[in-house]
Image 1 (cartoon, rainbow, N blue to C red):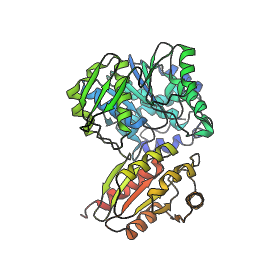
Image 2 (image 1 turned 120 degrees about the vertical axis):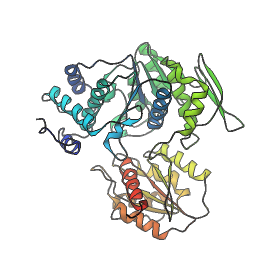
Image 3 (image 1 turned 180 degrees about the vertical axis):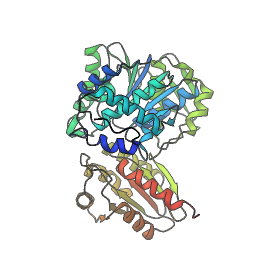
Image 4 (image 1 turned 90 degrees about the horizontal axis):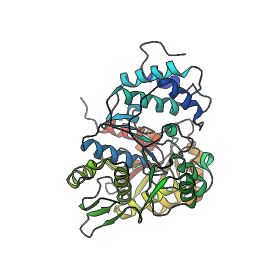
Length: 430
């Protein structure tokens, strides 16, 4: 039953959490049935972004480049870091509460008795918001996997799979080949799909061949190279660009993300966004909340990163090693219960001097006591148990010296609250 007229976005989001008996319930039938009743007209350009890591960075690059080139772009991402409105944006500007509530009301009017999950409801609402404004391109970030994800209910005009590594194993499979097959579900016959990693799972190639999808690969259909002058070059099937400036997003791996993005833009025929001056104006200025994000307060240097699987943790560890501090690194970590705590802690252990476990702000979070035990076991040294995020941040601040680094990692549901905490802490008294 629809909420009373005038209900706030907060009221709607609380109600949506009660709508489905399952937080995660993969499948397209429910979303398809409601989408059919919504009768939404879909634009010619729908870009679907899948992969284990880097999806958010790629969406940010795509939006910034296409918007700068004059295209009107809607982006749907998840989860949010601080506010739900981040998930639904037009040309980089989050939708208003009023826009999202109006979209929820329209979805509810079409839902009938279909038990949509929180994510499914939000996906449909994003599409409704996009249809209320005149957009050239929809960019949809897959929530989990691909084949059965709610975003996959619309046929893309082109898609990108950033990479494949172990994550969400309880839903997607226990090995790379099984997970790759789930992500391969975004492919369509005769439609280009860019794969952003040089290591291509066998199942991905086989699925593309079996359905007649056009699979574009690094080193074959496009490539990139870092130059000696810190610049880089990119080569596509029809377009080449040299003397490019590196992306502003932190981490060497972002060059690979950028290369995949440019290949996707070329494959989609949106070539106005491949103008060299535009690339050099847009990419170096990009930032993304919660991804290797530096935050300096009066008493400490913080680094916030949502690394929530072993591959992302390895990238974070490499970044920490490449930017050493003369003091200690304090790591505040919180994880959800479907994450590989040992696989995340192990690569970080050589870069972390003090571990602090926190229960992340989510019903599926691993309790701090359990997380601390698992980290201590794999790292062979103690991990402090914090009663709350505030307690953990206060403890780290109190123990750190001016040469130390304070890291918050492991989940969107920890990094977002930590950012709010830092902003409050840094705000001058009135």
